[in-house]
Length: 353
Image (cartoon, rainbow, N blue to C red; front, top):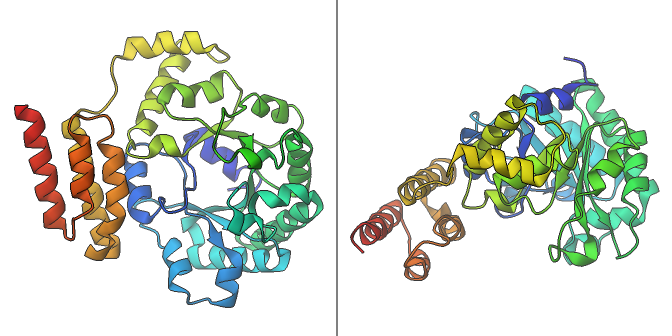
C-alpha cells in the first residue's frame, strides 16, 4: 500500500469517522462506534510529552489501549516539541504495527491547560513551529509507511481567520490529510461552525480535507460532503449516546449517490432522507446499547470503570420520558448488576406508563 494514498483509501472505504474526544473515546466506545458503521476511529488526544517523560504513565498508556475489533486505530498526539512529537509517533508506530492507521496531530484543542503550553490550537499562532512538527512526525513515520494528518480550527482569535494559509503550510510540510473545525479557539464550541471553510481550503491544497463541527445528525454529516465538498467527516458530539449515526449517515449517503446526487443542497438531501423513513433507534435499542456499552467497559477496564458509563447513559436516554429520575439513579451504580437492574426497571416503566 503506497504511503501517499493510505489516508485516501481509508476515506474511499468509509468517509464517516469518529473524531477524537477527551474523556469519551476509550476502547469500549470506539469499538461500539466501529460496530455501528464508523470508518476510522481516533484515540483520545495523548500527550507526547507525557509519554516521553513517563513511558509507564498509566493514564497515558490507558489512552493507547485498543481492541483488536477496532483496528486500525488513528492515534492523536498533542505537543509543541518537534523532536518529542516525532519520537513518540515513531514509538507508537513501532508498537502498533499494522494496527495503526496514522498519527493525527492536534492543533485544535481550545482548553487553557493545553493552549497555555503552546499546544493544541495555540500552534495556529506559530505556523512555522506547527509545520516543523508535521515534518518531524512525517519523517519519523516514514520507516513504517505511515502518514501524519492534522486537525485544526478556523483560527485562534476572532476575526483572525488564518485557516487557509495554515492548511497550505501543513500540507506543504507533509500532512496527508487535514481536518478543519469551523470555529475559532476563542469560541470554544459556542456559536455555529463555519463549514464553508472546507471548500475554500480544498481549492488551495492537494490533500483530502475533512470537515468537523456541528455534525449532530446523519443529514448534517452527509451535507458536509455533498454540500460543503468535504472528502470525509469527523463526527464528535453527534455520536455521544448515538453510535447509530454512522450507519445512518452511510445509508443516507449511499441513497444520495444512487440518485446521482454529488453536489447538492440541504433541501435535496432532506428529501432523500424522508424516503428512508425514521432511522432513529427505539428506546429498546437504546437500552440494549447501554447494556452492551457497560459490558464492553467491564471487559476492557474492569467493573470500576462503570463510573464512565454514567455520562454515556445520560446521553443514551436524552429526550426519553422520566429521564431525570434515571439520570439521578445512574450516579449510584457500582456494578454491572446495578446497571442492568436500573436499565430494566426504566424500560419496564416506559412500557407500562
